Amino acid sequence: MFKLLKYLNTCKKEAILTPILVMLEVLSEVFIPIFMGKLIDEGIKGNDISLAYRYGIYMVALAILALIFGVLASRKAAIVANQLGRNIRKAEYEKIQTYAFENIDKFSTSSLVTRLTMDVSMVQNAVQMNIRIAFRAPAMILFSITSAYIVGGNLALIFVFIAPFVGLGLWIIMRGAHKYFVQMFNKVDKLNLKVQESLSGIRTVKSYVREDYEIEKFEEVIEDVATNGKKAEKWVMFNNPLMQLSICICFTLIAWFGSYNMVVNGLTEGAFANIISYVMHILMSLMMLSQVFLMIVISKASVERITEVLNETSSLTEKQDAVSEVKEGTFEFKDVSFRYKDKDILKNINFKAKQGEFIGIFGATGTGKTTMIQLISRLYDASSGTVLVSDIDVKDYKLEVLRKEVVTVLQKNVLFSGTIRDNIKWGKEDATDEEIISALKKAHAYEFVSKMKDFLDTWIEQGGVNVSGGQRQRLCIARALISNPKILIMDDSTSAVDTKTDSQIKETLREETPNMTKVIISQRLSSIKDADRIIILDTNGINGIGNHEYLYAHNEIYKDVYDLQQKGKGSEIDE
Ligand SMILES: Nc1ncnc2c1ncn2[C@@H]1O[C@H](COP(=O)(O)OP(=O)(O)OP(=O)(O)O)[C@@H](O)[C@H]1O
Ligand SMILES: [Mg+2]
Image (cartoon, rainbow, N blue to C red; front, side, top):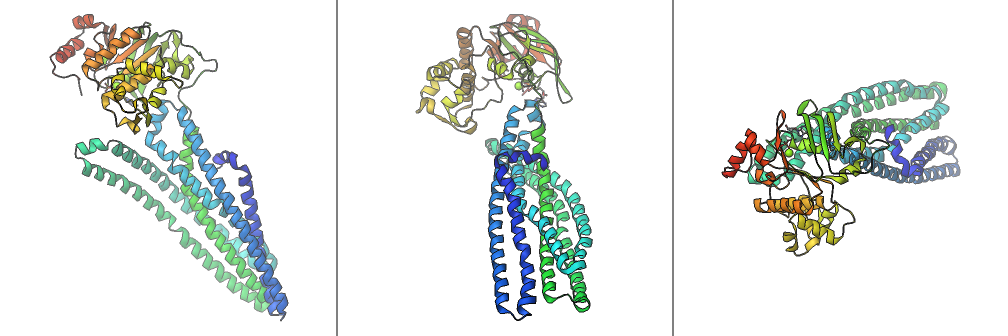
């Protein structure tokens, strides 16, 4: 919990004022029983009605004061909780933006969503509901025990004996419930994953008439969440009975010893009424305190999950004196191997591409094509060996500079909700309309964009669902081309574009961007047939390198697939 205190920086004043106001509230309240005792002993028993009225007025005034301080404290607490929630979310979001792909893989997107939304809400609610009570209850207990001791002497010690037992009980409950709350939140991660997956893929679900299956899967996940919630509640349910029991014991003891003291030691009725009020205060505070503990248990799991996000360091680090210019569009793999966790993907890759070269990459699904090209712009770091761009290790560049000059049109490319202009400008913030149009033309996207009613202002829905697959791919290519990078990588980026347009795009790129090094991954050999060199990847690494003629004559995989695709028996392999 304390780790998150620094996120109170924008509401320091309120964070300090809240406990002060709470103390004032408690102070106002603890004086009320004193006046009540006096009202009974001096006013009623002393037959002095005007004195009774006066003490009555004091009590009302104190109650009003307590109310005012209470309201003010609650208001400040609400500000503190909201600011805390806002600041933690901001910090988490900023941290996630620094993550490398590897860090994102570690958490999974859906878990990050939960950690950014629900977990922060849990903490925020816990603070909002409890900050006042957390200060109020202990202060109330302390003041009340002290006052009760002054008025009733040893009677107050009963609380001191009961308190350790209550504390122990609470500790056992907290310990028992905590692990189930942690498990429950992990299940909520799975729930979010399921929701995200099935809603974003709802069209696929419907086209395969898999609704019932999806509902069944969903039920399994929510059942899991409920089961863990139930287990945690099993512990939590002891909380109230424990409190009730302690209250009963305290009351009985006070009543016994109180009446004994009245009869034997001459304790006055006023003092006894006084002590009974304090007993109420103390027991109420104990009840509240147990709720605070409970909330702490629940939010502890959330706090841990949030701090995990905040403490995660990006697996990609930048050197202090990092290189800030990419001179040439050459790149090289020197003995590069790569593994995801413990799964070896790339083995001893050696390859050098020249400036302006058109490199094709071909290989069956899962051979590591995407993995290989992601190393060039440092989306991942090689497990061993070196990847160089313009003869400098990619790890020596400023990330921003490297990614500006090595642009990848990812296989899973996405458009964001916004206009076409907004989307293309992602590649270059200050791009003019002329530059946007020129990029669209190169990507052969101009033709369909110009037919759209709002042209560059056409609104793209979230995920680009209102443009066709091929159109989306071409817009993504335009987005990459607009910054005129030194190296352009297209990962299966024209798979949904018709063969004719596909070759036109490649031809335009060749003619209009001769100095740009182009790396094109494709399952369609016609798409990379004209490349200067084609890399054939298989599960053992590079199987062959050469141009079309060379590979057709010397590489079995290439020849077989090429012949197969020429015959029109299929344009993809192994899928
Ligand atoms: N983020 C990841 N975490 C763990 N394993 C991964 C990850 N991404 C890919 N893999 C695994 O690495 C292997 C290579 O994946 P990669 O995406 O590089 O293949 P690919 O050649 O691009 O395939 P495709 O032609 O289908 O795009 C696959 O076996 C895949 O399961
Ligand atoms: Mg791939």
